[in-house]
Image (cartoon, rainbow, N blue to C red; front, side):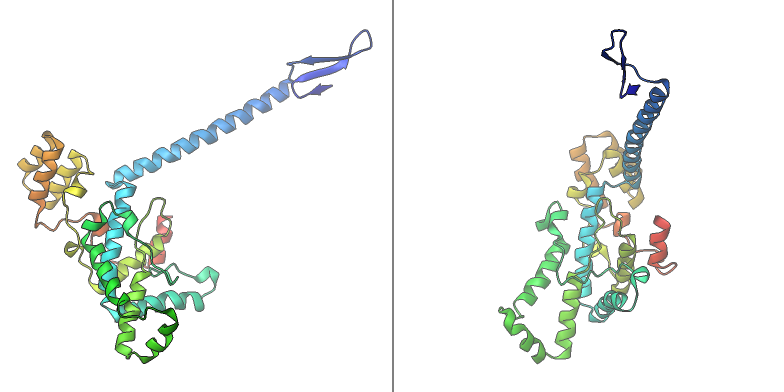
Length: 288
C-alpha cells in the first residue's frame, strides 16, 4: 500500500512498517508534469510582462508619460467643452441616453462619466502648477464656484431662477467636469477614449494652444528620442545630431529652443485624422 511518497506494509515480525521516500513511477510522472505546468505558467507571466514593456517602448512614451499627456489633454478639452454648451448637451445626453434606452449588452462607454463628480487631474501631471490646461480648468471651476450658492439647500431655488442661457452654460461646465480622456496604465476603456476623440473634433481642440515640448517633457526622453522628435518636427539634422552626441542637460535646453514655435505634438495630443471612419465601438473591438 502506497501513501504520499512512502510505502506502508507489514514486516516479517508482524509489525507495521513504513518506508519513506518511495514514490510510484506513475506518481513521479504525474508530479513532473504538474511541475512543468507550473513552470510554464510562471514563464508565461514573465513573457506577458516583457511583451507589455516592449509594447510601451515601441509606442515611444512610457505609461506614466502617456497618462500625464492625456490628463493635460483632458483638462484642455474640459476648458473647450465648458465654453460649448451645444456640444456639452450632446455629450451629457449621449451618456444618459445610452444608460436609459439600451440594455446591458448594447450599452456603450461614453466619454462623459455621469457620476456628479470630477476626476482630479493634478495627480497625473508631474508639475500641475506649470500646466496651462490645468490652470485654465481651475479658473473655470473657481469662477462658477463663486456664482452658485454656498449653501446646498439654496441650490434648487437658485437654479429655478436662472435663465436658460445660464443653465446651459452651467450644464457645459458640469459635463466637462465629468469628462475623462485620461489613458492610464493598464487602460481598458478604449471605447471611451475613442469617444473623446469625437468630442475633440466637435469643439475644435487645438492642443498647440495648451501644450508645447518644453524642457520638463524633453528631460523624460532619451537623447535618441529627443533627436527623433526634432527630426519629426523639421529641425536641422545638425542640431539633432548635436543633441545625440552631447550631454543630455544641454541637449534638452537646445532641443527646447529648436522646437519652439514648430507646433510639434506627441501622437496622443494630435487631432484624430478621421474619427468618423469607424465607430468608437469598432475601434475598441479591433483593439481587443
